[in-house]
Image (tube, rainbow, N blue to C red):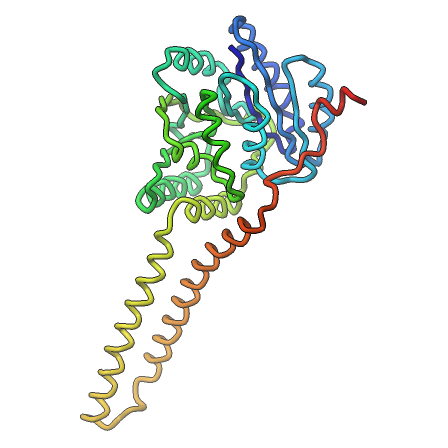
Length: 312
């Protein structure tokens, strides 16, 4: 059996050698399995590419280098397309995904009962409390508004059968959210739980703001509920406006004082204006995604692979 492992990298010069060293320990324990490690250089500006070039001298290492930074989702998609293994896995290079778990994941798939073995964190030790709070809120919200289940604490770290990978590759959308796609395609998944592991070296490239934007992308990718909310706001404020108009007419006829109460009226106008802008923004998010899809641009552009290096 051949196992392909996809490892997206962005400015990870401190981690690549450490990761490969730990993976070799696992690979030596699984002697009957042929491994293919596919590193994705996502437009790194440090020495990541130089290290990958040197590492590709090993027969079990391949790499793909993008022309610029296209994002982790593009890296995952590229890795899935290039992978040739019977089983295909995803891992982070920072060793927050324990490599030794691959042994158990492989054994489970070999029993042919499951199509995918995925992992989820059961703790967030070492993570800022505010970040953990918003992460929990995000999972609660998206699972209420989306028909596709997104497992709380789910990691990209997983091992899949070739059939499941081929199904994922049929989803060719430009705006990708892999965790949602993995769930959307179906197939039987076994979940393994583990406690949070901190990075072995370097710093995370995911800031709070990037995670926030990523969460918005996932919501627009797998739910249309925000559009329904915008429509509900529109109907609700039309009804409120109608009631206010009737109230003003009646008050004017009875008391003959149409000018009093302008501060409250100004507040109402600002409130309605704000809601209108919010609804317009929600619609704009969906329109922007549609705009990017219809342009049909490639998800990524490959500048160099290990084959180009060997041909030089």
